[in-house]
Image (cartoon, rainbow, N blue to C red; front, side, top):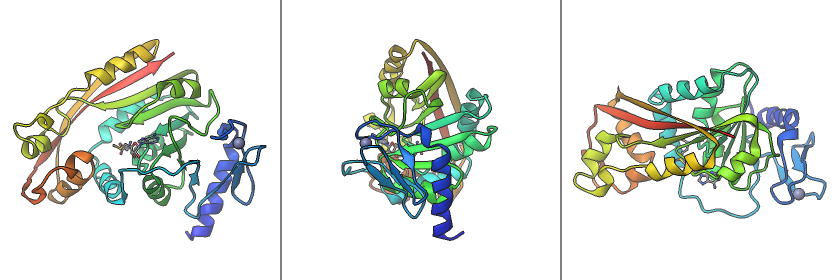
Length: 278
Ligand SMILES: C[S@@+](CC[C@H](N)C(=O)[O-])C[C@H]1O[C@@H](n2cnc3c(N)ncnc32)[C@H](O)[C@@H]1O
Ligand SMILES: [Zn+2]
């Protein structure tokens, strides 16, 4: 598919879902023209890029996440290492035709793979990193991708049945504004044995070897009226050529000096799945 037709396809999808979009500057309803301009009545306008995503930040943002990090995440996710996590998330969104927002979606694979498991789901991904969203738009035509700030998101209130927040920063006031009545926030946070084999070799005897996310879980519990916590723990075999990707996919890997000396045969995924409802 050429770039032009990809943009045209995205414009159609944005038009079909335009009632979801609110201007990030003045909060008014937005409209998508046939030419690919998303604009509000005050004429704040955002263009669909040739790769098919919408850039909706109104200030420049320096992201610490670059192209290589998202390429590495893409390879690791495609190797199936997070399959059980995606399945668990999809299992929480059983309703047909759900509208799902992934906040801090990165290169988009989680959202894409979750939507594939659901009937008629509409997936929208937002990330502050243009590199992440460019990768998402390159790989996946079925979802809608926006560069934007999850704390000041370009969407109307009560627009989403589910809001995902996977290993990313959160803003619960904003998430509650965006949820439809009865909707769910689904947040994934690392637990103490997450990537344990990697941390053991890289940071033996230092405080990075272990960590806790108790505070994040507590904050989540105070933010929502109804909260469920489910732990997902498993260990999967790791192909040799994925080790370097695993090192490059998190900021943790940037601080490791002798990356080549690290050898891993398997890797442990240990995450909390937090579900919040009003
Ligand atoms: C560790 S990555 C996780 C990405 C993806 N959810 C995954 O699991 O592969 C954290 C992501 O949060 C994004 N992020 C950080 N602050 C953000 C903000 N204010 N608005 C939107 N995205 C943000 C980063 O750009 C990055 O892609
Ligand atoms: Zn506006």
